[in-house]
Image (cartoon, rainbow, N blue to C red):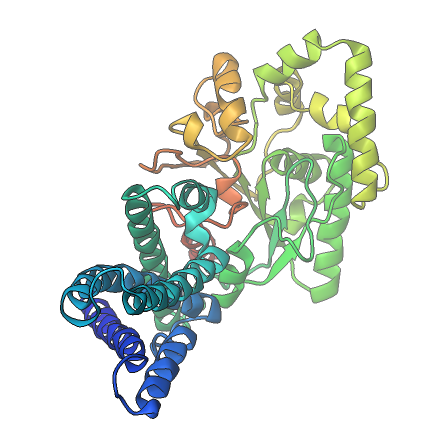
Length: 442
């Protein structure tokens, strides 16, 4: 932090001198090259604000953007004082020379601000939609715009600092391969989503796991099928993995309905000998009472119409035989009660589960912030879709907590928003999860 403050202060003074000298060169008998050098210094500062190395180009751009915004704020204060002094002792207030000078200074500050704000808006993930929108709303509100800008800078600085810590941590444990489990890991998605090549369902998690030695595969099941039909596709994928790489078993990490699909495949479809462990993430093992209420109350015509729309959309996204109603019906609390009675855990497979809750629904990610209250009415504390109690299954249950206003939602546990929380590092959580499986010999 101290080094950053010193660097930004020096850059601000350099920028201030460039602006002042360039403005003065137009009205005083300064050599022409003085104005050119000051202009080139200004341009160079905008292109390369610092020479500090960062873990990635994205973080380098974000950090430089924060530097430029800091320079903007510091020089803004210096320029206000300087403009008053220049008006009093050099040009006189409101003279043509004074106005030209003010216009030149304003233009330079304008360039620095937009250079910085575009850099951080395009690269800083922790800003989220909230601070980006607030920046736009209060951009032209005096004082408030400076407060919001200061907060944006602080958020970007925090992100850069955390990513640098992550990079250092990964370098220090590079030889350990902490995620190199005995058996490869199969990531299984939930309902209404697909494993995509260009938009990974699991966000930044797979990259972090692979960097730490994990061997990953994906379920690739269709997005909306009954538990039984999804389980058939997953079972086939498990057999393909075992045959392809010659491993004895796989470790499964499954999110949401994917956990039910995997339990069915292990118990009923003969792949129990090929599975070392099943970790379910926010899976509705006890079902959702709100699903019972919703399906019982909704007219048949409405349900069928919604199903047709969803199925048509899912076909365009790659599903061959989508079945929206079957997928939803299997999430009923009544259906899951029968499912649990007929689908016991298999000996030799290690079962564990993870669950989380939203703290303040209005601060959560849309639309889970809206569904939270509805689910809470029927099921109690939840992650926007799944009751905390319903997500418990197996020998061990891990409850994820965060003091952040929005808590940890159904989407946060798979890094869907690609956004970090101050006290919950979703990528590091999965690294620790796989490291524990590795230490168990799995």
